[in-house]
Length: 77
Image (cartoon, rainbow, N blue to C red; front, side, top):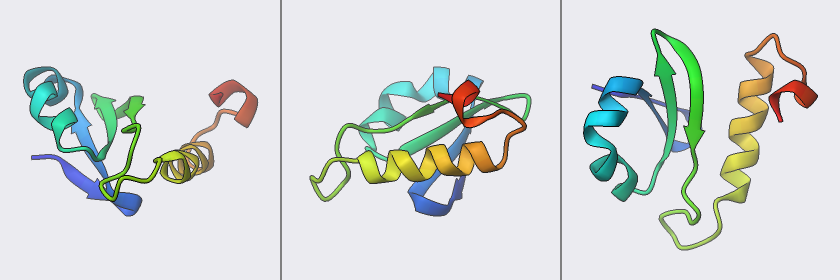
């Protein structure tokens, strides 16, 4: 089963994402998608659960990804 990290982001494997995409996307939470333990992408809902735009959460995700990666911010974006 998928693990949760800070900022209500759920870690999912690419196979789980593929097999359960409809249900995962309908949950309306951020997803960190991995293949063999390596980050391949993020899904950030357009709106948070409370109805506010999820841009703040997106910024947090990007900061975390940049901090945990060997890539520069320019390469990441």
